[in-house]
Amino acid sequence: MSSFLSSVCSLSLSLSLSLFSLCSLSLSLFSLSLSFFLLFFFLLFDSHTRDRAQGQTQSGDAHLAIACGKNIQILEVASGKCIKTLKGHSSRVNAVSWSSDGESICSGSNDNTVRVWEVSSGKCMQPLTRHSSYVRAVSWSSDGESICSGSADNTVRVWDVSSGKCTQTLKKHSDCVKAVSWSSDDTRICSGSRDRTVRVWDVSSDK
Image (cartoon, rainbow, N blue to C red; front, side, top):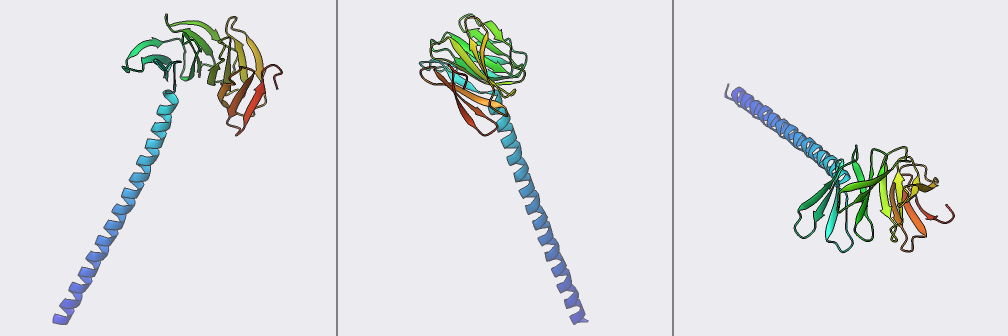
């Protein structure tokens, strides 16, 4: 009888230990799953935030222009205060660029437009409207006379600031153009695309 009771106790103890081990394993798996979920959520939120808060400092770094939703905020770098909000786009702003004299800003938006802003008054001087999809990148030439823009329509466009006309359309990319920049002498433009290429364009020849 004593041997039987001992066996029963040993079996109960073994079952209890097995159940405890199973619970510990389940808890570990749950913690691991929760960690992966939180990591995924953080990366998704961080990417979403970056996409909505791109900015560029003014020449001299006195002010910062930040794309924030449909608007553009002008911040004082020293104090961090918002001194002006530019409103006019009807969808999210993806990119901003200062003119070299610091008096104007151009912006590109999911409303398919590029807009040129006078910073002192906060007024949109003109919308540039030839793109057929989201404008993902903008850059102002150093002489202040031209703007280039990259779009989800796979093109790079060059704009004359004074007239608002599109003077060139560069079409070699096969996917969304996400970055554009002028050379220091304004004779070339480089563009980066989701098609995994960077292209350098000769503005005078469209090549």
